[in-house]
Length: 382
Image 1 (cartoon, rainbow, N blue to C red):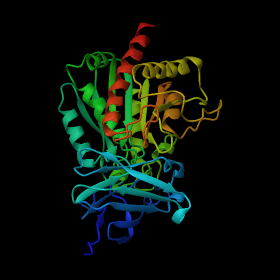
Image 2 (image 1 turned 45 degrees about the vertical axis):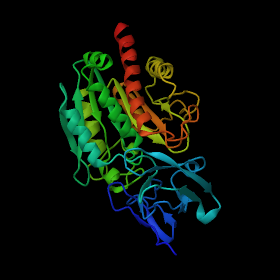
Image 3 (image 1 turned 60 degrees about the vertical axis):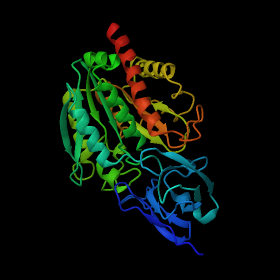
Image 4 (image 1 turned 180 degrees about the vertical axis):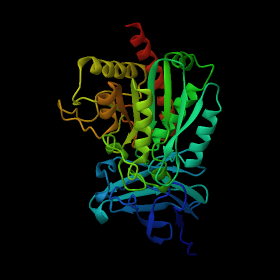
């Protein structure tokens, strides 16, 4: 008996795939580019009619993707209940059909979801905002709206003088960044957590869990509705191309910034690392010491962070001032940084079942706040 073809859908929040052909339990697929952009890498789709059938899903044309080096050694995220996200075995052949990732998986149920990383839906985002805004001592602020009219949500709390900005998902496909935010907010809003209680005494927090809601909902990798990479807009944001950055930077101008963390994911490097602001015009050793001190504290506090792998350091006077970390260090004299988590597994501490996961992202959010408390207390004692 010939079994029917599987069916594949992606017409949902953050969905992204194009079906080229299906034969039985085998499909040839292609990732849709970000709107008004050549960027593509994020995928998220559902397979139906799959129970007990070994799936072979071939995503083609990946040599032209945003980060081709992200595919070797990568395993796709998969879930049958949309709560637990494991990993499906993958192989990459850069010679086949313009670069092909082959996903192989045997589901137990009729439905299975596949994604570049465990998705963080806009519905879950709104649940996160609602829960945190209802916590004791938290105020909500809409900083502005995206090009498609979605709110740029900001949560504020704490009574201290140290102005701390935490913001994520400038690149919407880096969904681990909002899982990080969920862990960080879970810590900060826990009245019984001694780390949070002391942090709220020392700091005033401004938390933007999703800086690019349009790209998130549309299933983009890197851009907003207009095809703009928001993390290249910080020198001169505009209302017609990057109102998200314009709104966030304007709010920062009102409060000032002492410490800032921009939360991201990296496609190719199998590690968690920080990137700083070396190369800005007003670089100083004192500012650099503040960054280096935080990095050393975090490395000591968690084995899920390391300092050996990362991005090249910009030479003096050669920082890209369109990027938020550099712009905030220059504009405010802030100790600012970009946190990167892997799409792949973390090679120094691998997890065969999940790779880098939502759970580890959330735990890292808590660990980063523990490091911030130690950093802030040292700063206050000087």
